[in-house]
Image (tube, rainbow, N blue to C red; front, side, top):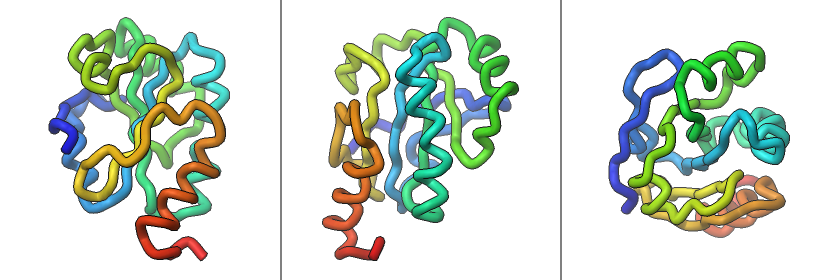
Length: 139
């Protein structure tokens, strides 16, 4: 089980990993200055829209300040996604072994890691995992 890390969301409220228990959760580790991160994030609302409320996405920014992340989000329409700010957290980076971004980690409804280091076709990987784990409910 992943520790119940707490973050600050774009409204500066607390958000924890346990807030998403009972659902598959994709953690998207990103920064505003990372081109591949921003490019991949553009696809997330479409992916989420295809699968209704399964999975949820928690996009965790590693920017230096929350104000920088908030400015970026104010210019985008990502309202269907959940955002959090971690800053340069050595604890988060160490736990998830983040050495490069973007980095995706998929948690099952109980909060266990079922896939990490997905750096390419997130939708394809996600569909395979969800199909296998939930007895083909996506069909």
